[in-house]
Length: 64
Image (cartoon, rainbow, N blue to C red; front, side, top):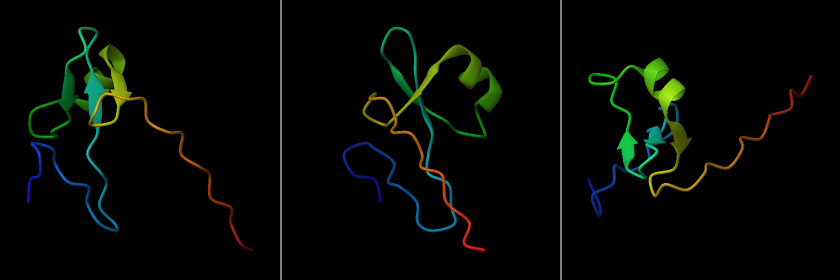
């Protein structure tokens, strides 16, 4: 289901979509069938679907 033109987040075990912002402010959704992830990472800034900077991911502690 697509809401408001955005691709919804996926559920457990499936990676969420990645978005990249071009210098002119346009946000591009990564599609493995169309884009090369390395090229996007080199040329553009990774962002959220709305163009804001993503929050840093917290490291998980191993319980041993």
